[in-house]
Length: 294
Image 1: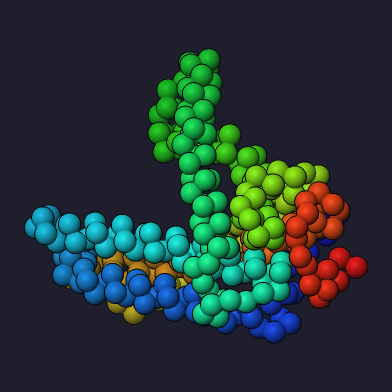
Image 2: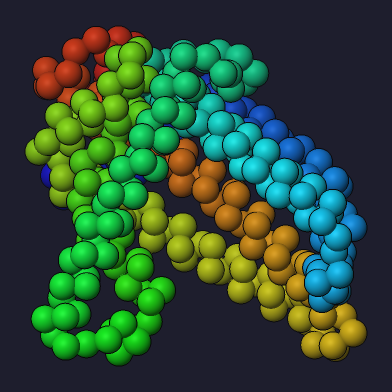
């Protein structure tokens, strides 16, 4: 059991090495994100230039409307693309199947994963309300103000994390269960995660720790390079700001894709193990996947 978190964390890499399938899927996914992001930047080039120069207050209503429309459209496409990527990873890791463009498609698996994402987003709203009530009660009991407790921002994060963290851990394999069973079975995650809470927690913590460390190192290294080349000249501040914002956005997008890839491996392995133990049925597993538990 002590090695289970490590085995689960890097399960996606073990499966990927057989034929390099998910490497091609990741490249195709990154290409779609870059193409859609580039189109959004080109559509709002004038606005972004003004923002970088600090003259965004002079933007007219038409430019603002275009920016909002682009943001909403890109957000919908981004989450749909992420659902397609997660579904592709899970489909290959659990069922050994590939469909569409290098594994990416808008088929039933993608729709199930997308619905699971919306379901979780819907669950966070009442969870946040519950968390706010709990934190408010504690502050009242301790006679402490939000400012004394670290500020409203910290309290907002705590308010969401208190009820959401344990539930998120239990429901995390939901999309993997849906892909494995070929139907929407998000809440089967409760059975999948039963008896694996500690192992799953360890795997998730490893993934997020690696992402935090690597993301911090990448951004810090980029920042050092930018200031070493351009210096801290105030005339170059708009260019520096633009480069840093671009680096942060790229790091977040790539990091999110990397985390999705690793977590797909963790959750896929949990679903395969649950099916092997008879906790869930309807999971058709190819022999080469089943052998990882022998």
